[in-house]
Image 1 (tube, helix red, strand yellow):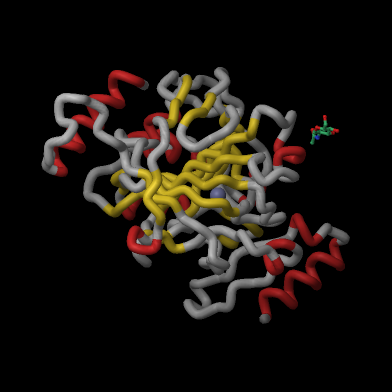
Image 2: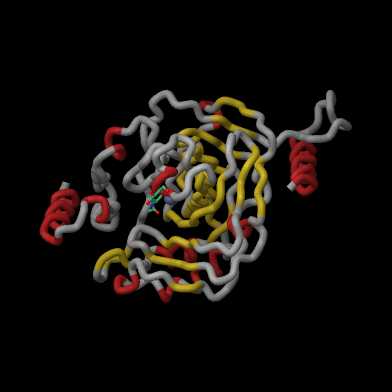
Length: 304
Ligand SMILES: *[C@@H]1O[C@H](CO)[C@@H](O)[C@H](O)[C@H]1NC(C)=O
Ligand SMILES: [Zn+2]
């Protein structure tokens, strides 16, 4: 409650719009802090994100493979910014295009940003980090337009699990963090020194995922997102995650958590898609799960 009151005061005394002055609860002060009301659709929407994903409550789906174009091309001169709510990366050299799966349209990558801890949970388990790869439906010229349509945006969510092994792609992002983490650097992008392939932030098996109709997890909370949350997780060390928590969103205030609380399902369908075996040789036989997995991976290598 204090948080909301404070925000309203800041908003009106500085003449800022409400939309630019939203935030996350300070869980350092109080781990039970209520999640603030962000207003508009964030409070009144019926297909909001994130949600808890659970195999036993999901419908089984089978689609053509998702197709990823240029995701493994190393992008040079990417821009990175501390926008006060996350670390965001954009300005790709190539059009990174996604189609196939259950998607009726082509989507291209607009930006990538991170949440610490994860926003989605799987079987009620929260992960230390979630990367969002945000795509715009190519039918619409920009993100503002795309947020007006229920199929305007696809976000691929990649979850990271705690490991002793530092994640190299995350390490290359962290290398630039010192240049943007101070409050004085908020909304001032820097050019990333080293190149990064978006596929480095994704697991090997991209055919296993939960998909559902949801929203942006930050205001305006537009209900225009087809979510694809990959089920294979990637390793990250807790030390790496701690580094993200050092970015400042206000003078001397570090952004220690930037995940939204779980939202109501409202009877929405969540579909669990698992990579199919794609050879005739094994058809009609009972293959072990291991064999299906190996064949699935081999098939992906052939077709991607
Ligand atoms: C988005 O595209 C629409 C339609 O072309 C245009 O009117 C609008 O100004 C654009 N918005 C931004 C932020 O570029
Ligand atoms: Zn996000």
